[in-house]
Length: 317
Length: 258
Image (cartoon, rainbow over all chains, first blue to last red; front, side, top):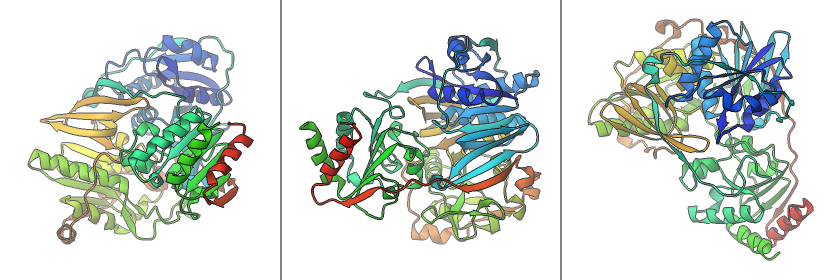
C-alpha cells in the first residue's frame, strides 16, 4: 500500500499534525509526503518520520493551498504515481486541498477521523460522532486514491530515524478562474506562554464568566499554572476572545494533563476538543451541566466568585 | 448583486441525536430547523445585497420529505426564493455528491455573483462541501471567512488561519464559507414570517438536476460498524460552600501541578 501524507509547515517547521500522520502512515505501507511549498526545506524532517520521497510545489505565488496543491497532486497522479490512500490533517488547509482533489478525482472523503486500519486493499477509518459517545467505522468502496482527514492528536508522533526524503517537484498547473483568490497580507496574532494545543495545563472560559472583562481571570489563572488560556465557541462567537483560543470541534483539540473548564456547560462542540485530557476540573453554576459527567473534580458554584479566590490562594504560595 | 446561500435543515442540536441502525444515517424524522451556522451566511448575504443596492438572496438546500421549515426561517429573514432538493434516493449521500447536487441547484437560481456557505454543518460536519461545490462550478473559493466586503466586482476577505488571519482578494463570481460570529443574524420580523409563507420554493429531485448516482450507491463509502465509545467516568462533584477553591488547590497539589 502506498500512502501519501499532505504535509504542512508553519513558522519554518513541519507541523506536529503532519508528523503524527507520517508516524501512522509508515505502519500502513510506503510513505511519501506532499507539500505546498519548497520541499527541500523540509526533506530532513519528513524523512526522519518515515517519508521516502517528498513532492513540493515550490512557492504558491499567493494562491490558497486548496486549489493549488490539489492541482499539483492531480497532475502527479495522472502522471502515474498513484497512492492508494492520501492522509490529510483536519486543518483549514488540509480540508481545502482534500475537497478540491475529491472533485478532480471523483472520490469521496472521510473526515474527522481518529483512526485508520488497512486490511489488504480495504481501508477503514473511525470517526467519533455525537460528542464522541459513538464510534462510526466506514470503509472506502471502489478504487483509490482514498481521501481521509484526521483530527489532531489522533496518533503520537515518533521519529523513525530515517534519512532525508528524496525531493521531487510537482508543478501547479493553470488554475484558470479557480485561481482568482490571492493572499494579499498575512497577520500573525501574538501570544505569550505555551501554545494552546501543546500546553500541559489548559484553563478555558465560557459564558459562565458573565462578561468579556472577566476573561482576564482565566488568563491570570492559566499563567499561574504555566498553562495556556482557552475558550468555548460561545465566547469566541460573542467576540470576547480571538478564534485562536477556541477549544472544540471547530477549534483546537487539546489533550493536556490538566484541563480546567470555567463556566463552560459542555456542549458537544466543546467536549470533542477536550475530553482526551488526562484530568478534567470543572466549575459551573448548573449541577446538571454535561461537563460534570466527564469531570474528575467538579465544583458547582459561581465561577466569578470561585476563580478570584483560587487565584489569590495560588498567588499566596 | 445576487447571492446564493447554502442552508442545511437539521434536527434540533439541543435534542439528543442518534443513528438509525437500519439506514446508518442520522435520524432526521422529526421537525428540522435552520442550522444556526447557516444563519450567519444568510445575514451576510442580506447585508451585501443591501449595500449593493439591488439584487436578491436565493437559498439552496437538500433535505428529506420536502422539508422547508428551516428554509422558511431564512426566507423570513429576507431571502427571496429557494431551491429544495428532496428525494428518497438521496439517503446516504456523501459530501461529494451533496456538493454536485447543491452546485446544480445553485445553477437553477439564475445568474449569481457569490455563493455563501457555513464552514461546516452542525450535525454532519464533514466540512468539505463548500470547497467541493466551488470546484464543481469552476469557481475560486475562500474558506473560513471572518469578514467579507465587496468593492465593485472585487471581494475582500479576512480568512481565519491557524496563526491569525490572511487578507485575501478575489474577483467575482466566487464562493465563500463563513465562520460563526461573522455577523449578528437578525431575528425574523412578524411581517417577514408572514411574507415567507408565500415566497417561492422550487422542489426538485436529483434526477431533475441530472446528478447520478446518488445516495449510498454513489457514496464511495459504507458504514461497517457503529460502536459505543468507552465513556469517561464522572469523579467527585461538590457544591461550592465558599471553600470550593481549596478543593481545587488540593486537587492540583495531588496531581503535582503546584
